[in-house]
Image (cartoon, rainbow, N blue to C red):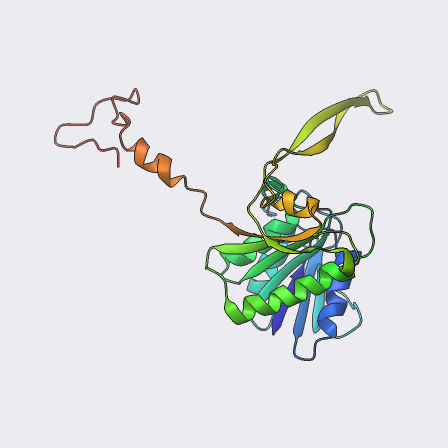
Length: 272
């Protein structure tokens, strides 16, 4: 099994190290690590365009075939790995283990999920794995889950436009109630921008806020965690609303209906 490991917490993060150690225990894994040189949480699917990316090969010890730190985002890391750094194509990409859960709308902001998403866009099956705690430093359970799921992904495959978003409770194995296949829940943040002043008298703002789970469904990702269960959510990249797509075809979307000049003679206007 050829595995690419990345994250958004940085190449020295404890969660990444836990997955690396778990993979190194396997006798049939060729492991590559390409991860940011520092924390890149909430970087979303951003890529580096306006300045160069610096890459440094690092020695993480163990059986990792090769490892690099990158001065960019998780998406940069996966792009570089597959297009420039690796001497073979990975069979699966593991992004994580992230410090803190990635639930609901978090998938739009999460660098962890975006690392897995970029692999998907490049045709490599992937999973994003998060530990549902900001305080715990114990990533062993989540790492074992990540590696077991990676094997299943390689063996069984995933649809070409779908990844697995996995959230693991911060509990001992005996206290985990099971595994639940879930949907993305309604998980939102009450954003607050605190206004401050720096020593030079310049005003700046610092984003803070509390997350709120607004979904009572036990088969949402947050519902599974509330029940002390591992949540596995298939996430697809096709954001098209197919129901509205059909309705839109009935709207007056000809140039005149959109406030534009009428079509030139001989040119038919169409809304589909």
